[in-house]
Amino acid sequence: MDNEQLQLLISNALKEDIGTGDHSTLSCIPSHKLGKAELKIKQDGILAGVAVAKKIFEQVEPSAQFTAFKNDGDTMKFGEKAFEVTATIYTILTCERLVLNCMQRMSGIATLTHQYTEILKGYKTKLLDTRKTTPNFRLLEKEAVRIGGGTNHRFGLYDMIMLKDNHIDYAGGLELAINKAYDYTQANNLPLKIEVETRSLQDVETVCRIGKRKVFRIMLDNFTPAQIVEALAVIKGEYETEASGGINLQTIEGFAATGVDYVSVGGLIHQAQSLDLSLKAVVI
Image (cartoon, rainbow, N blue to C red; front, side, top):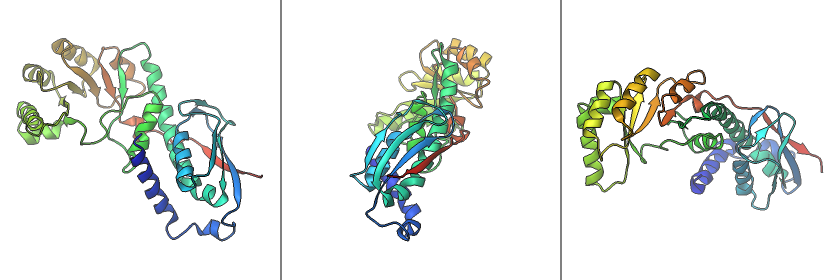
């Protein structure tokens, strides 16, 4: 993760939550009194967000003592303890909800991602996430996919050119869109890879005809596994390939069996359910 982005995310999240002050804590807890708390696991799954929790506590109170008993990516079971933190009680209570929100969400995503990657074992196909993320939380959602065993697709609009259906239609067609995008990268000296969405076998043939040295990956959008096999026969390994569109736990193996390089699943993030964790005070 980008440490600067993470620091900004934490600062903004705390500012949103604290506002004029954590008056619940300020009203009844001495400001310098030390306390201890532990993260209790209440649901089985894949743990994610331990490193983020450590960063949150230490960003608020650099002298906080954080002891991890489990690491990101570990299997977690009900009743286990993930970490223990010693800091001022004010810091613990102020950070509590942000820590839990991050870890519960991240663990849910990592757990769902792990379920997908288990199905892909034995196949060459890799699992990609998408940009279907929660605004201002993408950094941690994509980190959770990585922790769960998936591969991060582009992070935003700036680190890859992806010509999707609307780009192609607005640009005046597939060939025009590819040529314009390639010329743009050359004119601006941008080392950006170009991926192109295709909607038919004819589109695939067009990319293969004009895309050499311009396109690095062909997205096969809403193709059936049988159609992907046909497309791969046309592509002949000259481009990376990605299957996309409505792929889920029940159908992903059929796509992997085609030999496609990647499958992208938006549901890794937007369909994941947060897991149950709690931060509990430990009486010193």
